Length: 332
Image 1 (cartoon, one colour):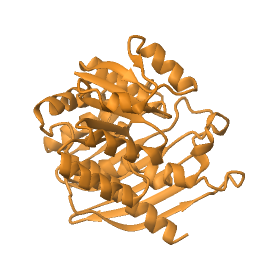
Image 2 (cartoon, rainbow, N blue to C red; image 1 turned 135 degrees about the vertical axis):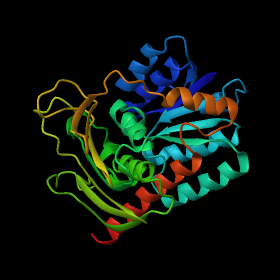
Image 3 (tube, helix red, strand yellow; image 1 turned 60 degrees about the horizontal axis):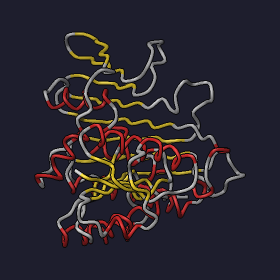
């Protein structure tokens, strides 16, 4: 399968492209952009054609899949153009920064029958989170009745581009960072009817960046289950990771905790899973587990199936994040 990239503003595009390449897709073209991400991408795929015009990629009938991590407010427009040209699109999160973008993407997707996939890397790229999904499906902790998702990040302000601090461009902290937790709430509870109970965003400690929201939280609910998420830009420089991402699943017969990036108890590396059930407590090292998402996605593109992630799930998780953001800003 031939793929191309449009949008190199966020380093997530490097891992997305690498995983799809390892799964069998060939990177044949990209729109070059200045900066270190573009330089790394060019070295990662030296045989790909650096086409200067987006139209050259869109009009190439041999390219089936386009991926990208452009500035967040530009991603939906690119994806809509990709679908209108008969190709499938894979976007870094967030795929949408405004509800109107999502509404238009829904309409174009229905008209074209192409895919607009949002790559929720905190699940798709996390071996421990993938294992948690397998355990939940197997009934290891009964029915999930609550999810707790924490997504702290390191700010690294001097390394950020100007758009990073502009609310209209990144969409707000819940639209952006918390889209991962929205995805996980839907995935682990199995709901298709989530509601936002309460939400809050704030700039707690960075008045020099008035457009930055450095803290956000939301309470979610569906029939038989609830969820809480907290995201922030306060990871200390002393932590050996960009963030101590955590997922706690409370079930009717047990609990799972995922420490995605670091174990503060001292075990090295990431992808730690802790399972507590009637039989006791176990630590499961998931660092060697496979990551099936990219391979499944390529199969879906070929066969027009939805085994990696459904289209409705991508849209619903994005909608939930946008609703939480709107509720939070209405209360600010």
